[in-house]
Amino acid sequence: MPASPWTRASARDRSKVMVVSVHSFDDHEVPARRLAAALDLLWRPISARRFPDGESLVRVVPRKGAAVVYCPLDHPNARLVDLLLAASALRDAGAGPLVLVAPYLCYLRQDAAFHPGEAVSQKVLAGLLSDAFDRVVTVDPHLHRTHDLNSVFSIPVAQLSAAPLLGAAIAGDNPGEDVVLIGPDAESQRWVEAAARANAFSWLTGRKMRRADRAVEIEIERLDLVRGRIAVLVDDVVSTGSTVRKAARLLLEAGAARAELYVTHMLASEEDTTALRAAGIARIVSTDSVFHPTNAVRLAPLLASALRCEPGC
Ligand code: R5P
Image (tube, rainbow, N blue to C red; front, side, top):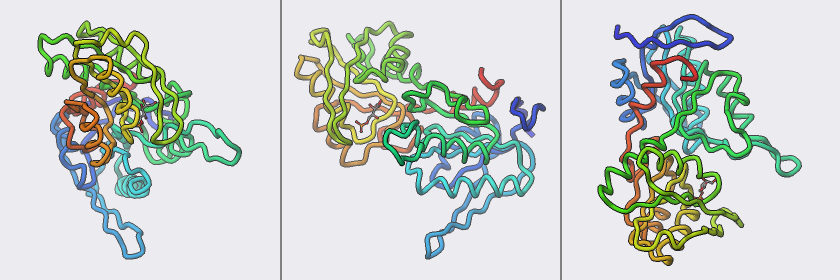
């Protein structure tokens, strides 16, 4: 059995364990196999048969020992129940500890009840996953008031960032060009800064007011700095695309030579992606955290490094 030592330090089990297999549903076979290959582990399919009434019959390949379940949580309402059933089946078969690798984690925005009667979705998600798994590994979680998911989950959560990979991709795609990175809102500053740092890019961030799901207003100070330069938008997540579409328009109106977009989690529909290109975004690059035709940056090496080392490293 290939050796991938992985130490857990949760309350449930403080012993050294060996991760022996990576499991995923069929639609994540390609990135899950990449992760398994990076760790020199076996990949095993999880099947889900849908009954006419909408219920699922989930079946795993039984394994004993520590196991990774790879499952990005875009389209969360459809995925969550199947994921919880898979975790239960693995435990029943003797697998454990179980680590969930969810490069994209859902339901993180709603970290408080903003109006009476609202569910605090982040807390509910954390409770479900903490009960089902022993550790979570994720990338660029979309956090607002919560700064560390370890304060919400009762199991260790490794929060990785794809920003350095995006920075390297921007540099590689624009050799010798005069590039300026733009974060469209205050939250994006940490990603823009991290992507800029290793490549000595200059960067700016804007200020965003969201009026509705698809209506945002953005202000960017010192927009004159983009004139004649390649303006690259960097963000953690693109959902409807309203934010980066509005930002791209401002950059091009200010005389940017070209607008590009590099993003960790590209959730935009085909129609919304077409609208981004129509708005003048010449290049769109995303990581493979969720499947999208713009995927170009692979996360498997980053995820594998988190599984090889101590929690928190
Ligand atoms: C906001 O905090 C995020 O960083 C994104 O800018 C936002 O979630 C994108 O949403 P949309 O694409 O729907 O504007």
